[in-house]
Length: 312
Image (tube, rainbow, N blue to C red):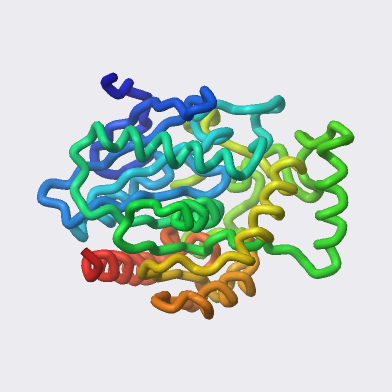
């Protein structure tokens, strides 16, 4: 069956021309993905976005990879972007089980067979996409190498808060308030709720404004804080992943020295036991190293492109 075209907001993505498509996971959830082609490409980067994200957010990243010779694909995970929202209120970050994201991976990988993608394939997982990507690699995702950006292998929170997060999120599911937002999070998407000054994503004002323009122009793309249900299943997934060995695949992980959203200790621990893995610490980088100041962005995309090209 031919792929069905989906909307794509090129005016705010600011990247190369892309084609977007609807696909359906095996449980009936409708998803969206985009493909940015590149003539005579060295390969295709499969970009797994983070929580709250959407394909248009990576238009500039697609341009950066195209300039270095790579095509790119990105996906709207279930519950965010223009993919099906799963609960009410639909601004709450939610997934029934974290394993459901692997249904999304399977759906997009099946759909990509209908496109003439340049090979080999490479994975780049950011934040929550790094958690989903690590699990997919353990299921033999067919990529030649993998890079991560601030992967969510643990959720950043204080030692004192962590037991309360476990208890409250665990109780929320049987007691029926799992769709409530986690305490301390907002019903407004982060970049509109938080001014540039003091944000935990980037030190680059232009990139922050880029994300704000996208949210103001197309509010249907936005997502607010995580639900208690999402928090609980995410904590469980991170705990389970910690017990697993690292996949036998070349890995490059970028981590900002000023990271404040994911648990950095879990990243250091994982990379210390990834035999063919390298941890690249980004000086003064915050959570979005692909959207940091120009010098940082150049380093990240140059390093990722060189790393991918060296593993064919």
